Image (cartoon, rainbow, N blue to C red; front, side, top):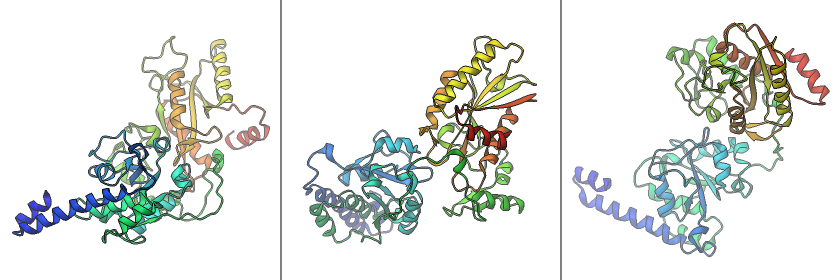
Length: 429
């Protein structure tokens, strides 16, 4: 209808009518083309498509994108739990893995094909667990031209979605390529080709996650930008402008977005498990005041001059055996009424904990059930920071919230692992 309204305002109503007619006729031809499929015979068998409007963090397609997918491209949307025609919604990678889409189309808002291909390649490790990745069904498209703007080119966007979804279905491909206006592969869209180098799919050890050291890691660039008094620097991996700690301090408060260099421990972030980039408390303990009903105090109720024990907690068996031992110590030794805090490190990209290979959200649920405060430390593979520096940042976050700690003890549950114990005593002692 806006085509007609604008044409009327410009004094050429007939051109608006013609544009509207060709748009809807084109969309109808795309939908009819998908019905030629010799593979998809039922509604339940429709290709399940995940449209990513942003990759890091992942956002699904909102506004008119769901209609393009479900009404006209011959597909179903992998994010069916999100209401159609709403704003784009931030997803967790675990939600994406659970959705298990047949294909993924990366068409980030404002980016052309070349840039979206680059971002898709950079997101390899995040996409790798998907069946769509293993089957070579990750696609990139010109998001700026064919999806982000509500204009006539959305017709071509619908055709691109169908072409990607029915790639390999020769009957549908023949019909789509016969339209005469489907953008060419390599110009408007492309299958993302990943190199064949073997990549270890296992999750790296915690201490190995952040070992990259060169002059172009974001930690080094951030340090240089702060030394020069700059508000932003350019991320070497994505090309995005990133606010420095200086810029955040000028704002004077946490904005709640989970910014990379937030100096306020992400105090205003709501979904901390999926958003934090700096050490922060995911759970501060029971809301009630500290009393005999709760064995360990919540962060706001820990009194000054307390003994704090910080348990490095991975969510596994050894960690729970250690908690059990600490509980016994608490009950049996009234001379040392220590307070306990769980500390967990996890991969900032996958939000998964090393060794246990479980999401950080699972450990959050554990802490909530146990009513023990939980501090989480994201580890980035390309930050250039050391493991020890990140641990120090986490301990600093604890000390910023708990006044005048009289004694700080680090506790580990590595049973029968003498070499790990020796390393911890040497490096953290």
